Image 1 (cartoon, rainbow, N blue to C red):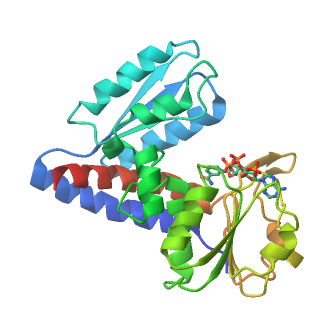
Image 2: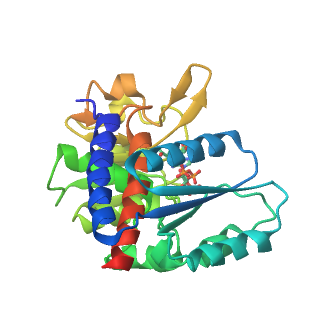
Length: 280
Ligand code: NAP
């Protein structure tokens, strides 16, 4: 089975659109999302454009603040503080990567945890690992929602997460643990990745290496979620060899059209959640 991320993301956006209509009639305002974009990175510009488009489509008041590559760190931090204090702003996102002269950690820590739609603030990271209610990073949340479409109850499943980045692998592992999975986290120093993957009921691949996960690495009936987005000569491919693995797995996400659309839908979800938490 191919997991249709586009359709699942579209259903989530529809649900959020209805939520926002209710919010508007009750509070006379709508959730607001402010996105800060520094520089001219082409991929970042496309991501931000899509975030703005989908926000507007469902009724979020979306604003993009654009700065040139050489903007001073202080200006960005001051803007974040201004947005933290703006009642019309429910969520703040600073598009990564940032230019080298801007300290990413300082930027993340300046965003108020209650407006941290990306779930990157150390307080939110700590809350997630402590099992408390918090903002969950958008891509892992999207992966979990895709998994839940296939299997409502993940309890007792053996999940192997390939990659341990703060953005994907680590929060993904925490989310799966929260679902009572037995979780193995693998990374570049893992001795025998194939022998770890072949034991998995669930594989989440977030590595950044085209087609790393092969058909003979996957157990029959496993669910495989491919986070990877890799530009190759033959186009965009994931971290999973789709042709091989789709013949073995019970369900698999395609690239594109799997996790990608869910990441944006979950950002919109987190913006609405931030609004609800501050206004309940
Ligand atoms: P990242 O920060 O570069 O982390 C990659 C992780 O993979 C690291 O933990 C690294 O291990 C591990 N790794 C590298 N080579 C490995 C190997 N041979 N075997 C096992 N693990 C290995 O990447 P990321 O930001 O998590 O992104 C991963 C992929 O997801 C990229 O293709 C990115 O474009 C994509 N992505 C997609 C979305 C989406 O919406 N679909 C969102 C974000 C990212 P070490 O820690 O030991 O270095």
